[in-house]
Length: 135
Image 1 (cartoon, helix red, strand yellow):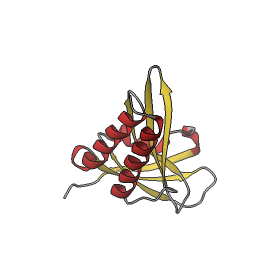
Image 2: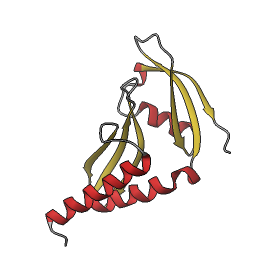
Image 3: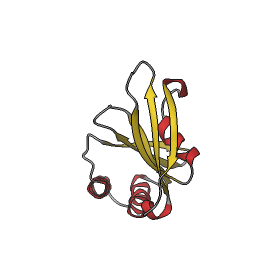
């Protein structure tokens, strides 16, 4: 079993790899860990700096924090080849501005799940979900 210090160092190293690969700073990328039965769930969340809304990037489940981060690192390196690109146009309740967000997902329902993650569905109105052509 790794020592606590080694686990923290390895966790920080993998998180930095993920940030660098995605080109996002620590302010725009949140790593939310929580216990799930005898496992650890990691929700990787992005925060858009323009409209300050957060969205789910991806979820992984592992045996411990480092295992879950390693699975996330594997996903981040290959998600563009495995998932389709979607553009979602939406407006938050009370706003007057139409927003555009981009997601990678297996299907449009998963893209919408990422948009609505952690919020009441009545707080956002979706105007369109478009599967983008792959070049």
